[in-house]
Length: 248
Image 1: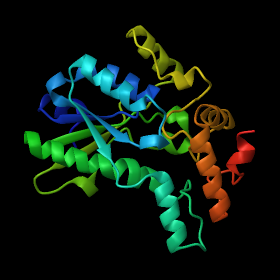
Image 2 (image 1 turned 120 degrees about the vertical axis):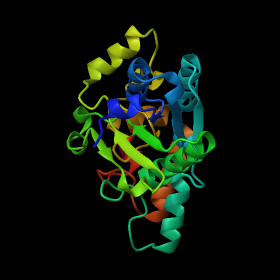
Image 3 (image 1 turned 90 degrees about the vertical axis):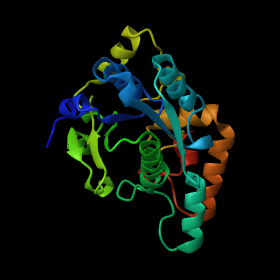
Image 4 (image 1 turned 90 degrees about the horizontal axis):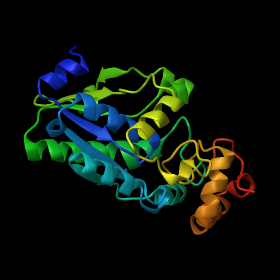
């Protein structure tokens, strides 16, 4: 299998999956140094009101400043829609995503991004794509096991080659923030408020601090999450503790 560098030299399209978080931001800074701009496109999977305000705008503005195309992928449902539909269909099983069954990632991020990438490739006539993500080994044991570079057979066809790349997989958190600072940029304000990650305001993996911060700045959304937990009888967080207890 060819290396990312060989594929880039051959003209491959590099899709930058940009959540608006620090890792995506640092990854784009890094990729701009090694990939010609005309081979880059920034993709953001919009989570609507479920994501931190300003996340989409940060990704959009960073792409614009770099002169790189920006596309937004949108699912036809939100996280709460997903929970409500699952509860209506199967009230006997947990309604929320879990570490084992992460439908939030597949249905709200991965699949909408893949659809948008296919559209973009068709628009510009590209046949080889590298989907770059800011996953880092330091974040979790499962991410540490992820391959840095691999071929995505699921998305390959007779006329399309699709690869997955984690170009900052071995970076430390300090290196991420330093890369952003050195480039004269600022990370999303949620980090200054105490968050250690940025995507959904209320994530099933979120720390207590991040959940509390999210509730302070998004009280109406917190209320809706709590009401959904109470109505379904199932809790959102992997700790299985109610959100109303976690945010106190």
